Length: 111
Image (cartoon, rainbow, N blue to C red; front, side):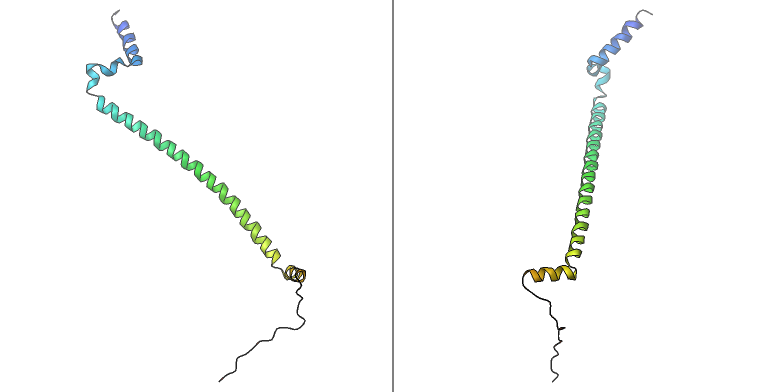
């Protein structure tokens, strides 16, 4: 019974120091251990890649909201500037006056 206790502590110690990896029993499991390590690295990379994409999507959404509000503001300003009264005021500022006579439609002669 005394022999099992030191062996248990010895196996825990070999786990922390990594001695179990070079023993004869584990030699045949190295390909599987490397495969699991590769899968763990692949999973970590995939997780980081997904996080980057989530952050990029959030940044693009916020940029889209800003651009949409700028578009709405610009469209509203254009509608206000296109009002007839605004156009007349700007035309008077550069010396143009509104015509008192309506425009005449010119029709080509029929041959």
